[in-house]
Image (cartoon, rainbow, N blue to C red; front, side, top):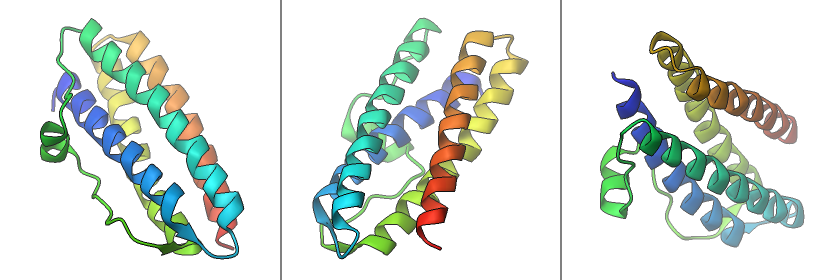
Length: 144
């Protein structure tokens, strides 16, 4: 797969994750509500930054980031979540699985960027890898 194609899938997944994190922020319930409500807000704010950086990088490379929900849903590999109350532990498991999927994509894009002699994109994705690895560790610790 070409670097620009993979970057566009990543943009689609970030857009979907942004909505999904809002969903969980609004509908999470249970004893962990206050902590998770704040954490999901932190994560969707971070997702906004990543989404914007990657979309602008894609434009700088001559690509065209997906910018409609129809395009996002056609490209995204993450799955939507229905709007309904969800218990905190289950919400953490959902986010954890999505971040593990994104971490695998980050690693693949990092390699593709290196193969395409694109150190700027590679650098972005090294940073994302660090963020996702830390967040995954923290979410896994929450489940113990």
